[in-house]
Image 1: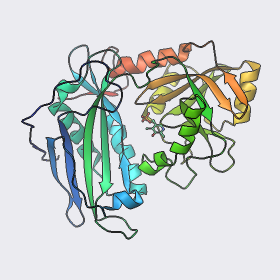
Image 2: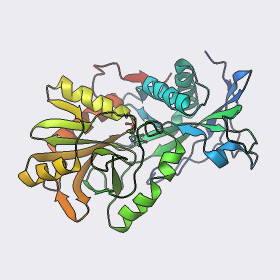
Image 3: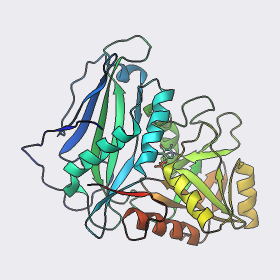
Image 4: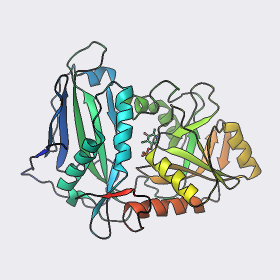
Length: 354
Ligand SMILES: *Cc1c(COP(=O)(O)O)cnc(C)c1O
């Protein structure tokens, strides 16, 4: 158990009015904890949300030693505040930490820190359908040093952002660009971690996709550029001939918690599921033969994001009839229902913030 000191702001901000958007508004408080080599993690605290002062030499600015997580708090119809599988974020955070030579945080401390800061800013959790409080835990290397080595000091911070629906177009299917030149990650690299460098490396392809009228990039494997990996911040699923197919975790794909939940639900419903390699050629052939029934992305921000169009080189594949598919809709309703307390929590995924 952390002994978390709480210092409340004496200048609470006005709550936002109107559309929230995503990731632009921040609450009154944040969680901060320091790490110092020899001392470990220390001084856990909730303090007013404020700018940091860091040395311009802080290692995170130069070599990107940092990691982050993403999860949400939901307001239930019963007025309670819920988290969805935060223990999974704690576990994944430590897998990222291990790979990036960042000191681990005990899972129960991670979850306690999230719950504590969410409780302090509980009245910031929006109530309208589809809205939530996005939670962004992150760790940065803070040694003022220009040599390349693991830092000896870090900050673990959690900030909170009331958010509306992730996609402005809502559940309307999005167009996705299959990138055939740039790659996101390779096996042996850091593709399975949530670390800033992965996203910095993704921007050039994202700009390319946007310029061509596509909202997201679908990455192919970094070696052969032949097998489907994942979308920028989502895992990808296909319904092919009645089977729910998703790329298997291979070290370069981010192991999404929504992905895991979706696989679990599909199996629970008796739908055949496959985690395996899927080549872009197989996808094109399935679309041509009519076997490709649904495509959707999964991630905390959007939950389920139906895909209506895929482009690979000169090939444009239309998926379905322009509406969300039945399995995608059922998954969306079920996952969000469990998250917000509308549906029973059969799998022990929901936890109350108290
Ligand atoms: C966060 C993320 C996902 C989705 O993970 P969830 O735990 O479901 O939110 C997928 N791919 C990438 C690259 C991500 O950063």
